[in-house]
Length: 468
Image (cartoon, rainbow, N blue to C red; front, side, top):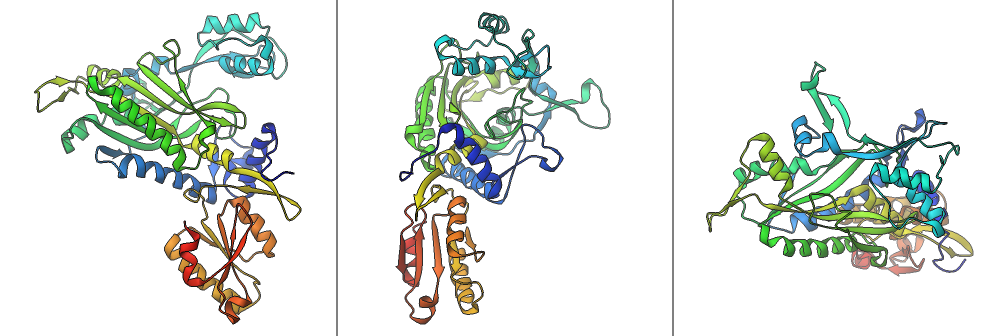
């Protein structure tokens, strides 16, 4: 196999899923009970990878700015929040059922699948309306993908998870697991104004869980029922939205570089007037070349004053902003940069997954940026049954851990097996303590993950050489 040659895209996703389970990144939710579709559990390395990605986001969009206020709103909200925004009546996907096997599918996904499998007969655009979906399915003679049975008419399926709050179960106790994090910030807009008296423009930022009862979860952690979002609601004067929009467009692209994504795999897609959400005056989707194809990673939308106006009208609470200089009162407009955390993790995993040949053998390694790698450095004693080597390795490990944090001690198996294990974890550097370290004071061996090159480094220079 040629250096850095990659397997076919159809095989990459299965290889990533296998590696994630084998190395403790991501597991199927409730696996010992047969699993629960659309749910995934993050293991020790997956949690750290995800946390590193979150930390980079928070640093760029909150800590490094003076105009951003962090939030952590409750998952359960008053049902009137979702009535005001139209979610109760309209947060739906087109559901198509098979008359024979009763399997359920998203209508637009069936048409997307048809386009991929039949490029010569592909639809020019994927319809979203129910009559148009029914017409396209009938025209293309699309059958059930599972049993080839006849498909029923499309109908709307509300994706919100419904529950009851408190001891009673009646219309007044109804609540929902939030389908997005945005509204938790909009309903706290007045609290931020009253507590901090910010001047426009300013934003609210939040990382949190959202829940969507997806008809057909798919593609590993790409489309799930329990997800995490990193979102900003950035409030501006109505005449100043374009500058803020462009600023965030550039910042979002810069963030993809922060987490180590290949810029050639990130694409901007301007959403047409026909396809945009009705409340948006401009939307850009940032799409990524996943193993299963180019799909949405992030979104940037100009939501105007839609949300604050709806909440003001519905709640009866004044949500306008008073410009102290002009004494003008108005409802601010909103720019919304929205990031899927799980999708970012998947994009990082997809770009990092690499196969090559080293020492005459196939090698798999995760080429993570050191900024997001769950383990920055691994420290090995050459032999685990030699106390003098183990003690010195523990000393080096403690020194590096104090400075770098995410350092792992590994003495399990021979050196070759340890290298392969750390390659699959994505550890950028391995440090080996051998007898020359003890007897000749010649330093340690530092091995580079990407090249496999090994260099002798003095202990005094170790931190500067690692460059984490």
